[in-house]
Image 1 (cartoon, rainbow, N blue to C red):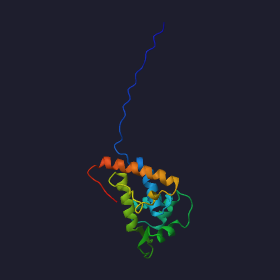
Image 2 (image 1 turned 30 degrees about the vertical axis):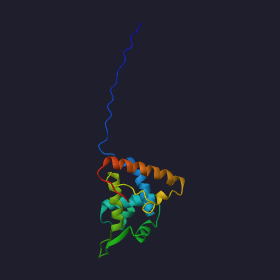
Image 3 (image 1 turned 90 degrees about the vertical axis):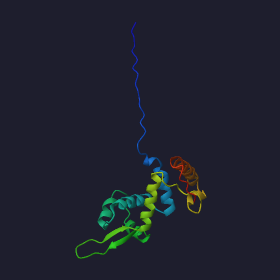
Image 4 (image 1 turned 120 degrees about the horizontal axis):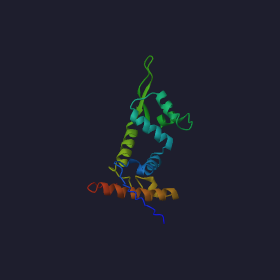
Length: 161
């Protein structure tokens, strides 16, 4: 008779210290729909948000990671996401920066990711809540769950929109 020895394994589940990306898709989709951005445009603008001042070549260098859209820079400039910070002088490049509106949008995105701000649930502030399509209905449910989690994280802070 052979004796089989059982090995007991202990597993310890560690909670992550920061959980920024749990609601990333919901916040990203809300921002894209609310402000009429495409997902690659949002990604490029987030990159430029951390760059501060940049030139056209910095923009093009990062936009190579995405699908080819030769009108992206002019479209973002015309739509009021990018503006000229300083004009070309001698051999220097023209410098650009994100507009105040763009910086405000991304500051709010970071606040949402840090559970400091809820996503608006009223249809006047959030076009998703009009629930015209099935994907908007599903996203609206996720937004409500996200807001519940924000309220749990910050019970003293209640923001009405």
